[in-house]
Amino acid sequence: MRMTGKFTALLKDVGNRWFVERKEKNISARAAKRIQRHAYEDGFVPLDESITPVYRDIAAHLSSKNVQIVRAAIFDLYKTAKNSETARAGVLEILLRKAESMPAESELSVYLREKIACLQKM
Image 1 (tube, helix red, strand yellow):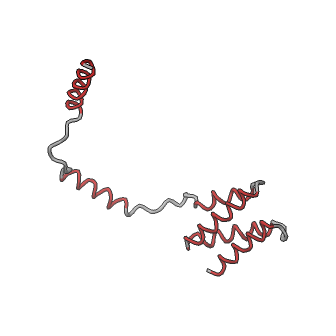
Image 2 (tube, rainbow, N blue to C red):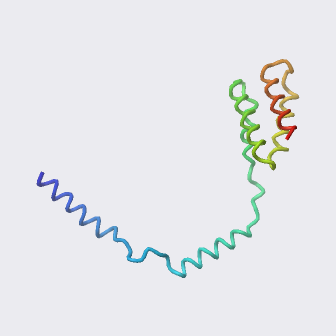
Image 3 (tube, rainbow, N blue to C red):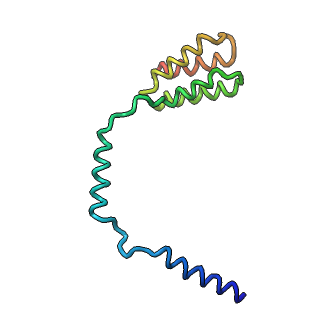
């Protein structure tokens, strides 16, 4: 019991020496100007054209042999196109290409065509 008390007192003392809080919690005016300048300069940087859209990564799962993975990929692509007008045309093109390569009578093909029809109505 006594040893524990000494140990905690030692830790409190060492901790106070290493983790001393500054009296002023604010940043300096120089640091604030630097942060503001960098934020302003970053606003003019053009977007990187090499960034791959998220839906292209999801579209890679359409070639899977597992039906659940393909169905989930179709659903995710549908949700992406539904929520993003900029991605809608690209997703619709991918889904139309997939619909052409699928047999028309399969259950997955019917599900895919329903999602395509919903996207074309938007």
